[in-house]
Length: 601
Image (cartoon, rainbow, N blue to C red; front, side, top):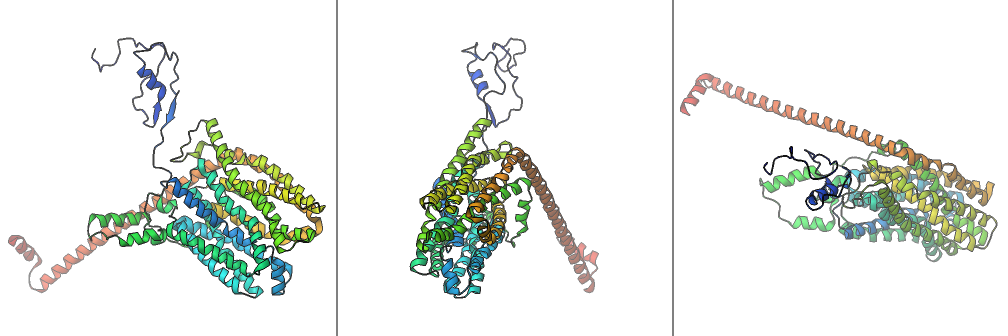
């Protein structure tokens, strides 16, 4: 028998059953047990007496990397986005400590001064629906730049105005400019971070967003005490201007619809950093008619984003998904506890302990420290729980290309840490309420404020991370939907919280809201059990919509090609008729003319 003949007549020396060779093996599957068996056939014939055909199978990841940005660039992007996330919540709450001064200087009641907070939050709800959809279509850079340019102009007007109506209108314009950054910040994280590593990056970004409501009153109290409340808006203008300079110069475009995983060069100037744009202008353009010019045109047609007016109804589509709708609703209830404490903290401490603007602003510090610690620590907790469940389910984490979450319980990975953390936050909120009600020593409510910031605010950040995971097709739009619901509800709650405090007292008011959180907590269990099925249905629906869209584009291209061919044929026929008519007019029959042409040729 020759060397290449199959062993049909000889008995195989390997004892026990063994799998037949696969005539068409999967190149992505490598069997370590089969390799060891083939290697040790001649040396050890007594091992692997009952091998498992599927034992030792591991999948070799294939395909492009999730992002080509190196870790240093990702950290730089996350740092800039963290400081950008601070702007909108800072602007909303920075003049909590100076509301009395605003009402006095403009000769209006405190209720009218509080109305500027309500109108701000209403615009804060609708603004991200436009910026989110625009950022997903045109890119993150133009959305950020337009957003903050509007914000700078509004701050300039607010710093110079001395009229209540102007204050009300300009605060809405200020909100329209700054609030778009909330959805864009989370979307940038989804662009550059795989799901296994996303909790850490979301933690840093959430730190900026969550510190804003708690640290900005401290800043506002200091500025209002020594420079007056108009100087608050000069501070906001300078902060944003300083942030914009390095962003325009050095922060690259990350939108996956524009640059993919970062390997595609942006073709539109608004997606380029200023440094890259200047470098591109200095390069010599390709020669006309050369292959380089044709490749450049094809690349531009393929990667240049199509600008369109943002569609806010795309945000509403997110809310009507069953899993996302329940998740956003529950996150909004948690957010209400957080924002109502922020909105009433200054006036409660001023009334019960007789504090001035500066002292009232300093009372926000424990809250802010708790929010900061929560953002950093709980992001790492999310990543740890993701790795734990991946190991439990037998999934190999791919930090380079990202993981396929279709069969992974991402809902459990994100929501399991929420249960104990939020439970502690509910107890701390009730304790804070009754510490203020009984007017205990100021250290008591301040310590409880730290725990509330650590647990309640951190739980809200965990929910936002899951929103991005569940809607990777358009993360900015998904976060905009979250922002729409929570800001509308927050605006309504802050409008009547004073009435609740007057009729129920601070103790029962802030006992009521944590109990609402407890009543709706079964949503977490429902999402962990039913969520994967809803996610699979949404993925299948998106696939069908994509196929219909591609089929429609294919038919449109074929129709366009047929029209161009028919128009070309018509033009040729028209030219031939015109030539024949000219020959007849000159006295030359058409047939003779063609015959003479052929003979001469």
